[in-house]
Length: 79
Image (cartoon, rainbow, N blue to C red; front, side, top):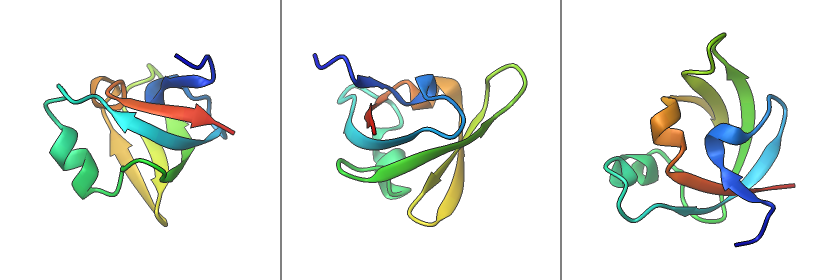
């Protein structure tokens, strides 16, 4: 796997990335896709709670809050 491809929850605040894939076995795959997280979508790490869970990402013009375990299912490539 390309070393620039990481899990969404590993982004630092202010990082921008492009969605590469969502784990096929993810229990929340359909919900993530319904919220606009699909391959090729640009995302921006807006913020994290003090303990790192949940996280806020900017996607398609709005801010989405995800649990860390949900964000781990999304692979992104930082740019």
